[in-house]
Length: 194
Image (cartoon, rainbow, N blue to C red):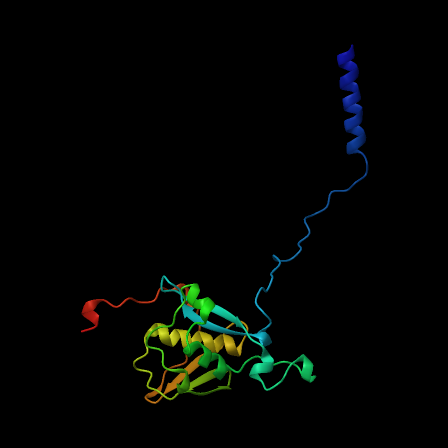
């Protein structure tokens, strides 16, 4: 008898819960996953592309004080801060890794020229142009990609700007930063060095 009372009570509770009038709803889309930008704001950083210890091209952001770069531009001067110029960003790349980057094992390709070779940069028709006062022929593919990616990210947040490198020996066709950062740097075997 107790068993029947328990079963009847359970059935009555179940019926009460199922008939409470709450309608079933469809799945509601809420958009993509949240993203978080952990880099300093563009006007307070420069992005150079360096080689990791295992030979991969990787982005390396550096925080900068824009008051130093743009002659006192910043919150204290009453004008909006501007990002460091592309030419200054390239010169910083060519100067080599800073102390923190060196501790992380980051380096430049040895074929990159001296910072004093940067003549200037310009953007025209959606393409950036970096002019160097040195021949481009001695630069390895990885060195050229370091320059292309550094210029592309200095000119746009997503690095999608095509870049033309110009040296004393002519111009190279426009290239993009296809995140060659995922490709290992080529190794030179003794037979290739002559």
